[in-house]
Every structure is written in structure tokens, then in C-alpha cells.
Image (cartoon, rainbow, N blue to C red; front, top):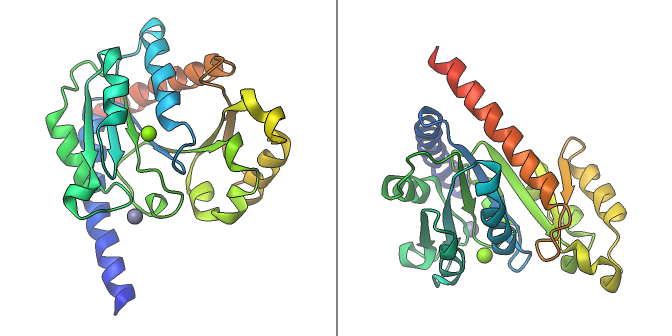
Length: 229
Ligand code: MG
Ligand code: ZN
């Protein structure tokens, strides 16, 4: 019985996710679902990304998911990109975003001219992996502070994502964190994942990350163009 209920919830979520995908496809907006444990640097990565994207000719918008507070949205507001905060505790305390929440946020955001929509999921390595939001890519972050073993302990998260961003690499040596071991662990659960290493603090790797965003955005526009033809 319980299994059936969960299947129904996921099927209903999937239907709304597909609507979101169509809407974003029409607007040629690349949507990225950023997922990770709390404190792994999702907001810091976004902060640095929003700072660098205008020079790369890309306009962005952000959906911030948190159980409570608007702290992350306030932190990112200085960049002037359209941003909306979803507090999941006002809708039942969920520890993940669902497609219906993203649909509501999309309808409120000014997405005119936006190239990339960043969706910062609730900090949690478990259930966000199960909910399709209508994004183009799921991206998992793994910070040096969390340790190399997380991909093995939370295999679903690291296997559903297309790409993994290893964050806080500036403090790897202090923490005895080995990116090489982390990458091996990621490869064990997801052999085809794209992997990139960054430090939002020092800027190391940020150029590669921005180049990747440019490439994905270009591909999205080409794909969306073909669909319309
Ligand atoms: Mg955050
Ligand atoms: Zn959850």
C-alpha cells in the first residue's frame, strides 16, 4: 500500500515536471537542479557564478529552496538577477523541492531574456534525487569538507546526476581530502558523470564551470530551435 502511494506521488510529480520542461523549452531556458548536503557550497557557487555570468553574456534567474529563512535569496539579491525563495516548511516541511513548487516559482519569476535558471534544492543528499523538477541537468555538489566517501554512502544522488561539482578545493590539503579518491568513488556509482573541481572562494576552476554553462546554454538553444522547426 505504502509503495503504491509513493508511486502515485512520483507519477503526479513527473507530470508537472514535464509541464515545467515544456515551458522552459519554449523559452529556451537551460534549467539546472543543484543538489547536495547542507553547507556544501551551493549558494557560494551561485554567488560567484552570478558575479561572472554577465561577462559571459548570459542572464540568469534563481529559485532558492530552503526549509526555512530567506537568507540565501538575500545573499544573492545583490546581483540583480530575478530570484525567488521557496520555504518548504510553509507547505508541509518537505526536505526537497517538488515540481509543483518550481511551477509556482516559474509563474512568478520574470524570465524575459533569461538564459539559465538555477534551482538550488534543499540541502539534503537523499530525497531531492527522487523528484524530477523539469530541469535539463541534475548537478550534485560534493565539498571537500564532507569527505570522499559520500558518493558511496548516498549512491542514488550521485548516480542520478549528470555532473558533479567538487567544491571548496582550496582547503583540500588542510582536510586531507583527496579529489582523486573522491573522483574514483563518484566513478564507481556513476561512470559517465561529468566532474569539475572549483573553489568559489579563490576562483580556481570557475572559468571551466562558466565555460561549461556557456556550452550547455548554447546546446539548449540549438535543441529548442530544432524542436520548434
Ligand atoms: Mg544554500
Ligand atoms: Zn524530502
